[in-house]
Length: 77
Image (cartoon, rainbow, N blue to C red; front, side, top):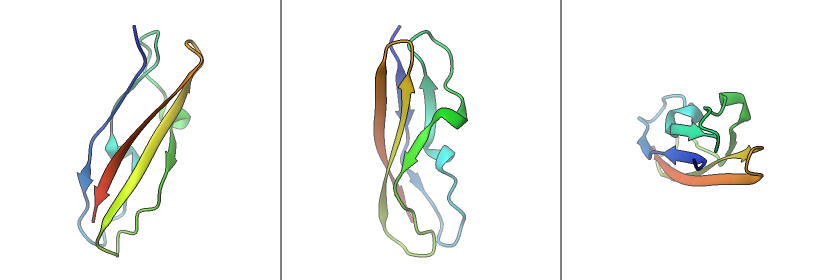
């Protein structure tokens, strides 16, 4: 089995609080176990009061395979 990190782009209404976990569809280690939310790392700033396009990167380290898994998506405000 292979590790997986699947993200989705989201649209956020102006003024609504951004929760980074909303972009994560699935995060799985190479042994098939789900990645705990606390093990996911997020990079990128989203300003919910300022309309625009904000890149967000999500990553985790798979201790089984020794790989760092990263994906990017976009949050539209």
